[in-house]
Length: 162
Image 1 (cartoon, rainbow, N blue to C red):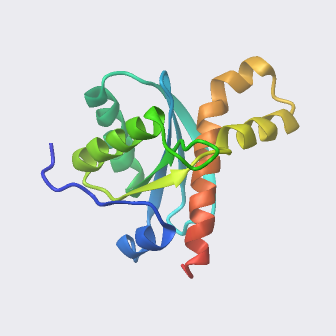
Image 2: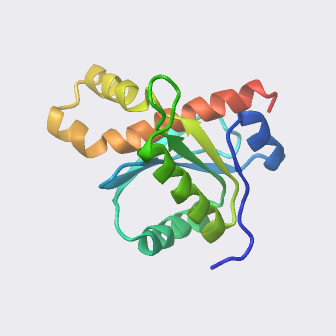
């Protein structure tokens, strides 16, 4: 395990300051059973839904994510932060923060915690609009939610003048 952890931030401005040269990003939508994945280009223009990993023990998940980070030359991670509608944080948000801390240590990359309150609903609406069957939506919803999370983050990064 790497000894230097990447910083964990909650604003696009702070994240952009950590990545002045840009770089590919990986987004995670952490569910209890699965992890939805999405990536974006080094110029932070377009988020693309990836795959969905079955969630297992942290070490195994981190190894798979580490392989993806290396193969895609990922420079930062965006993790959805599941806040309640009133902005408060419950057990799921705390679990996401703990996952972010552990992953930042394991991968030594900066992590942006991004509000995901509307991501799954937005992803489902998009998939319904594409006439994707209910069964197929269930298989891809987490990766599409990760893409919604990532697109929100990179849109905010673009507003930072990058």
